[in-house]
Length: 285
Image (cartoon, helix red, strand yellow):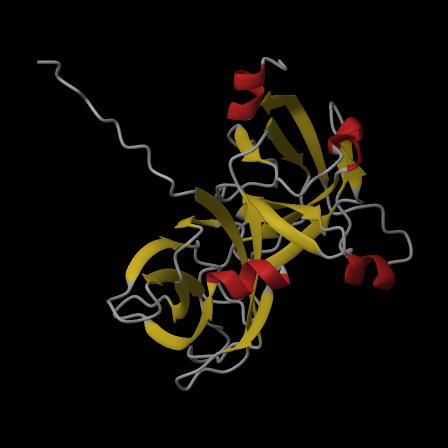
């Protein structure tokens, strides 16, 4: 006889979204001058809530902030025919035991249809959590660069400064959102940071018009980090080889002859395009 092999093709359509998360007005669980050090853990529950919760990802910890904007996007895989609930647990990182700051639950379908949600934190929580979804899996751009600072302001009483930078991009609604934080360089006013590789958000529709800016901070162990200075907004086309003045707004208002609080130089710059799988399949490269 003839042996027949039947290959069953799955009709399940699977997608992936990236969740951009920020919080507002969190409860302060720290003592003295400190503020909470929040992070968010994201859980999923397929099937409408009958089973257990599965951890799918976490954000980074933002130190000393009651209004954190997280640069780490959490990726969630889903099947289109499934009903999926998401739970967002906000925690305050502590040396001994993390403190619970509240949670919120929403269906992934509601999140996608509305293009994002703002939810009050429940179970004794205070404040809000805002979540914006972005479709993943298509073409994206990676920004590769190295930076150095010179003549930064001294912020520590018995030392110099412990600087790090945060890179922001501007949403289409005008709000700024962090997409990368560098490592901290200890006790220096002229830091050189390691090479950074940053995946630009996929909602950047026109790469040449993408607006960015840097903020440079002095890391503190006991008190909130101090702003050393920020750059003016700039496009990617203006980034290569640029030397930016770092401006601290409060200091600029007080000092008549204020010039800057140091400079930030782009020592290396490259923009790499990563095509989507569809580009390969259709031969459009």
